[in-house]
Length: 333
Image 1 (cartoon, one colour):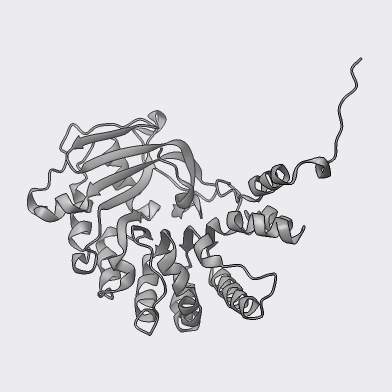
Image 2: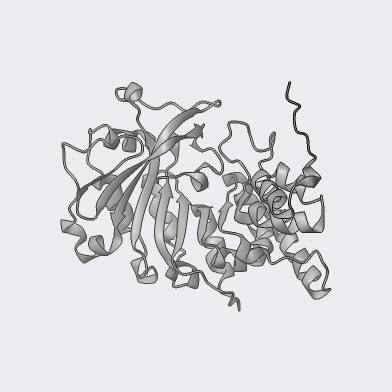
């Protein structure tokens, strides 16, 4: 009988051990549990306490995608940024530059909280401005746009990421244009190359569900939405996309229903070429029936400047919006 080979974790080469730590520290956002019940950052937080070396190894994984779903989370992250300034000034071994480490940032909030705490949250928004401008992918609720634009009116000149992707969670299409009324020329919007909308599921999901089911053309509401884009301050825009649930074969003849437990669905992204649309919005080649039905994991381009792409895997949808963080983790390739 062969004896089993046993070894302790401490016997591993340092580089191999750090690879394992990094893998274990990656937050998992595709979960059905509420993040308040199961913190996706729990592993990274625990591992950062192991040693200085492990902390430096896992912090980039920890900070790669930052979710701030409540005002309390926004305050905590702003406080962490201020604390890092102090560590840097004091030349502490705990100093770490968060800004280049953050690759994806989601800022969300309940409408009620933002309405009653807008003034209270403004100082924290100002603290986050260097991250907001430097992060390659920013996902925010439209209701935050005014606060960010107003905060940018001060003397803030942090580095700006060109080719930025901005993901906006939008309300019902009828009131959509109200969100852009505060936008003026700003460094944030001038840097955006890709603009993506996440729809409010209970209000607009059936509209896009019917597009996927070959029932209607995407020219409405996309044409209406694109006409409200502030093109004057978004000259770098290359693509405009909408992300929405994709119907599986078993759901082709039904409407979507989002309850508290949620449902797992593939996700479809409809993308419009912004430069081609701007040339002549009235004659943009919107696809007409019969529309292509794109299966999971594939892409179709029925007309020039318009494409459909569906994820390989499924995302979790609950109540009226994407499960928090799901949109930042969606993979279309």
